[in-house]
Length: 332
Image (tube, rainbow, N blue to C red; front, side, top):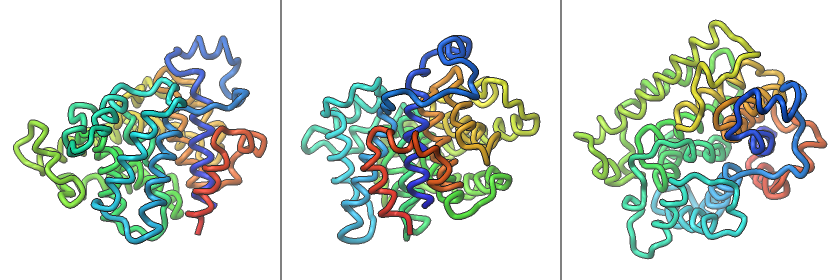
């Protein structure tokens, strides 16, 4: 039950990090006590991270009920889901400005999505929600990569947001497929290097022309180079691991896409067989704690499955029924 484990894990991490976002570590410790004993809040409310993950998951379910996944079939349902999230009264969990601005533009009839995309933003709002694309069975590598980048591009059109979303989905896919944590960063580096100048024109259309790059290859290389630099910092941190140190001090605070990926992986790889501890480490950090713990939960759950999470926590997480339903659909 890797899909269920990843979806429940990301929501638990999101809820655990929600109260600690925007606080420094001393403030978190003063409020919560020792970080290794942090408890899931009551009630266990999540943020826009989980809400937008569900939006992507619903769009994928809609599309794949009737045929194969492709850009011409995904854009409409995905755009509708993102706009519905933007309009929802439950969208009151400190969402990012890029998502709000882009979704308002996406709500305008007749506006091509490429013109709604914020090509200057590489915020983590794109890869915080991409985990479903690492979990849906039966996708080709091209479908997974293209859709991961497309779902980012509807709001965050910066090449680093695209590359980090692709790489995040690939990490979830690898872990759900049985990759060992010790080999993960090497596999991700090889994937990033192999795709460094690949532009998924079928999925992205003329998006690159809305940026300032000389061509589509240089557009994508800019994003993948940011991700490769983040993996360099991650590898350096893991060579001298310090579980008691704020992970944001070595791999970044996570407000931007490549740092969110690297620091969430940092927390997961410090504690690959202690998923709750990994989430607590991510939540007790000086950066974007809900997104970091959300991604760490997706990685841990994809690796260990649904049994990784305390039953009492899993049963009271917000949106539990919908998360479990999607997980059951993809647990094959």
